[in-house]
Length: 247
Image (cartoon, rainbow, N blue to C red; front, side):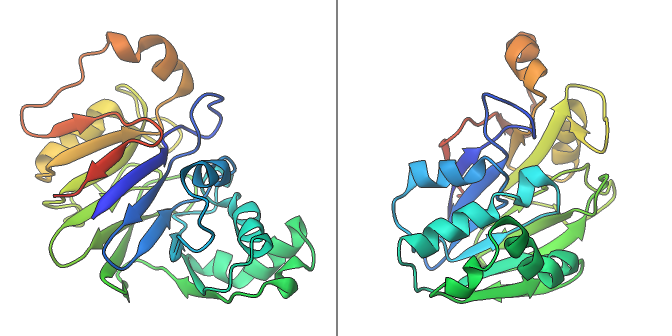
């Protein structure tokens, strides 16, 4: 598997697009979250209207799901006919048509491709082509589900937003762990910190930890001054369009 970081920024960062990644496996291309700045990143990365097979939405905060209408309409505008699957929590699944109509009323009726909505919930496993998806809640201001993705060879976890449950086994031995880390050593408004994320990754034997969703002022003014390291886990701070082989 390969992962492309389309954006690694927090909600209101003017320089770094919203936290979102594209998973490339042998049979599946899966988009992880689609915030309001994600569509332009997708379009910069690919001109292929059929590239994305499925989209996972971790939770209903604007920087994680509100880019969906633009992305889906451009797929339609460019002639997509291939079915698309969206994996999301129950509320978004039930209100998806209402959401789309609120943004672009009546346009979904014109789509020439089917959207298959699949509910994600804690404790449920979903198989999709060659990928197996499972979910667990994090500690966040809105109900957020972290996702674990494996192809029976390698596995990685994407936390969405919010610190993971401290004594959880959900993230154990992941080849890549992607956590949002808003501040350096303070957990604030339902977000992890860099320090707590490193500690969690070490305790859970992650091979590699990707720090994303870093506060815009911290990233701009102070991040380069900090000593961010671990003797146990490889740590990366990815930028837009960085790629990571999950090996």
